[in-house]
Image (cartoon, rainbow, N blue to C red; front, top):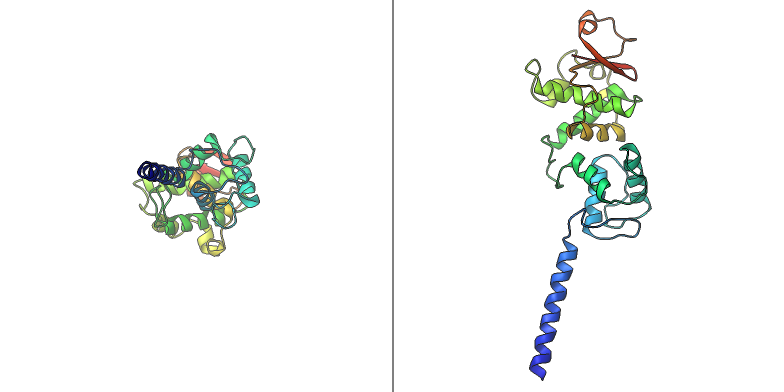
Length: 228
């Protein structure tokens, strides 16, 4: 009788360990997260939101007020139902923008963290105060230049190419970037391109440069005209 009782106790303990392990390592998206949720999925959620510039508070695995507010703002800016809950659609969009997995050594979207930081500085310096869609378009222009044979093939070489961007010359590049500029960069890296393939942009009220005016204009977003 004692042997059977001990055997069943061991089996129950093993089952509990397996259950705890399964819960502890569940992936982001396995369940809907909301106020009061806790665990590693919430940490992952907080990391992804933070990568995009949303303020979640400490990445402690506790879905509190600040995380809820960050989720709501993310949903509002991406056309999702604003309910403050990280469900299927919200998680899918977060993963689209930040990659399938998160890591501390770099990003899953092909650029180093230093490249993303520099690109966010450029977007902020060139498009501070512009519509969010226009900020994404500015980031997309840089990525389009990387893909073009007519330009250097790295973020830093493009940003610091002489005369390429006014924010480098007037020092705006070196100001602290806005949180929306980081979000715009990740959106562009995920494939969003409101500029429709543009490799130039300019403010028509601030330039008389003949070359830039000679380019084929695509559209205007805010104060910027985007062109090929």
